[in-house]
Image (cartoon, rainbow over all chains, first blue to last red; front, side, top):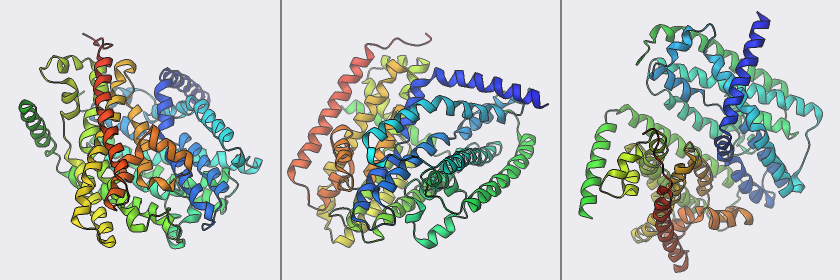
Length: 263
Length: 260
C-alpha cells in the first residue's frame, strides 16, 4: 500500500515536472506577474522613512521580499482546471482510474514549485545585490518553522480552493467564488501590509480567518518577526481540517450530481 | 469610417445581447467590484491612519487617483481583457486566418469584437470615489471635464501596450500570461507616483508609464499639472497607438497559420 503510493507520487511528480519545464517561458511570466508585494515594498519603505509606523524601512523591505517568496510557493490554480474538466466532461475518464483525480492536480502544483524554484531564487538574489543593506538570514529554528508554515500554507490554500472548485458540480461559474475569496486573500493576508500595521480591532478579527496564515504567518517567521507561533499552527490545522471534511462531503454529494456533460 | 461605426454597433449589440443571458453575473460583478473598492480603500487607509501623507497628497486627493485607477480597471474588464487576451487563442487555433480575410482592419476587429458589460460596476464605483473626493476638495464641474482628455490618453496608452504584448503571441504562441505581467505592474497605479522611491518613479514613468494613467489625470483635476504633462501624455498616447499598429503589421509578416 505504502509502496504503491510512493511509486505513484514519484511517477506523477516526474511526469508533471517534465510537463512544467516544457513551458519554462510561460512559467517565468507567472513568476513576474506576482509583483504586487514588490510594488508595496517600495511604497512602505518610502512611507516608513519618517518613522511614523511600527516597523522600520529595513524590516518592511525584508517582510515584503519574504511575502514575494511565500506567494511564489503557494500559488494555486486548481479551480480553473477543475471547472473546465467538469464543464467539458473531461472528468469522466479520470474517474475510471483507480486514483482520486485530486492527486493529479496536487502533484502538478507540487512539480510546478520545483520548476519555479530557480526563477524565484534568481530574483531573490538579484534583490540582495540591489539592496545589500536589507539582506538577512533567518535563524535555523525560524527557517525550519517558516518552511513548515509555507508547506502548510500551500496545503491550506489548495484544500480551500479545491473545496470552492467542487461547486462546479452545481454551477458553471465556480470561479466567481474564488474571485471573491481572492479579494479577501489580497487585502487580509498581509500581502498589502504586515498585520502589525493593521488597526488593532481589525487585526483581532482577521486573525480568526484563514487568510493571514497563507502569507503573513510564514513571511513573518522567515523574517524572524513571528509571534504566537503555536497558535498560528493550531489555527492553520483547524481551518485545514474543517475544509478537508467539507471537501470530502461535497465531493461525494457532487459525484452523484455529476452528469458528464459533453462526454 | 462610417462602415466602422456600423460594424462596431453590430459587434457590441450582439456581444451585449449574448452576455445578458448571464444576468446573475451582474450581481457577482457588482459584489466583487464593491469588495475590491473596499479593499483598496482599506489599503490606502493603512497609510493615512497614523497621520502619514503621500508627499502633497491629502486623503481626498489620493482618492481621486484610486478612483481613476478603478475606472481604468473597469475599462480593461470591458474592452481589453475580453478582446486582447483572445488574440492568443486565435493564433493557437489558426482562426486568425478568418479575421485577416475580412475587409476591415484586423487590429480593429481584434480590439473591438466583444464588449463585456461586467466592467461597468468598476467604472461606476470609480466615478463615485472621484466625485466624493472632488466634492470634499471643492472641485467644480469644469475640473472633471478638463481631466477627460488625459484620462482618454491614459486609456489609449494602456490599450496600445496591451495590444503590443498580445501581438507577440504571433511568435511565442502560448503567452497569454504576458499580459498578466503588465496587469501586475499596473497595480502601482493605485497610488500617486510621488509615494514611490526614486527608482520606482523612474520605472513607472518612463518604462511602464503608469504615472500617465492615473496620477496625471488626477493632477489635472486638481489643477496641479502644467500643460507640459498634458502634452507629454497626449504625445505618448499617439506614439504608442501608432507604434502598436506598425508592430502588428510587422508581426503579421511572421504569421504562419496553424493547423490549416
